[in-house]
Picture (tube, rainbow, N blue to C red):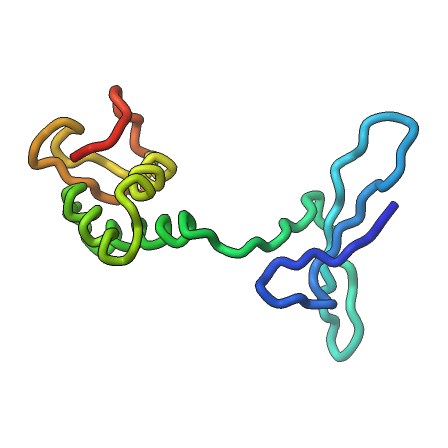
Length: 142
């Protein structure tokens, strides 16, 4: 068995969550690791709070992650929706390529509704908190 601190944020925290997992096993398949955190006790001390899921390792946000966050914010700020060309124009000014915006749109497809139908010339994309059924014909919309 092995124990390690899992970095879950940009800064390393020596008191952060830990992962307990099997390092060597000759009896069968490896079990999934367990996770735990330290929970402060008043006035002093700590107890272990166990979780059946180990914490996820932190990773620096990618350009696609930033684009996805921006895309979601833009659609939420415009509840009536925006035309795809307008979104791509705004994105290009911020350094996001049209192809990246299309990839992000496909990843968020469950939350993006077409206002007039996918092929309509005056179609717009708008955010929906309720899952949207997939379009029959996937692809870029201009």
